[in-house]
Image (cartoon, rainbow, N blue to C red; front, side, top):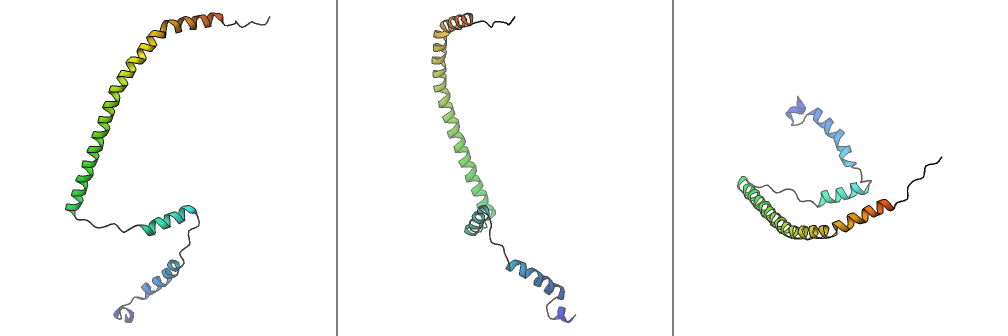
Length: 120
């Protein structure tokens, strides 16, 4: 009771004494990953607290940036499709121009192959 009235607690003093040495003996990083992680953790600034209005404004700004990115990507894809359609048409013309000659060459090649001779 005396310890409690003095503002202390005997069990708390025992726990603090048991924990203090383990905190004092923090292990040094052993691997490259641990060293990089420690360096990063020490260099980070604590997260700043923001109010709900500022958080809402930041989320709105992020949403606007994402919409802008999506519109740019859609515009680029649309322009790419226009070019690809022109190229596809040209490639189809090339395929059609060579189709007959390629078919004849394949048939000629297939008929000119030596046949496998079966052993007797």
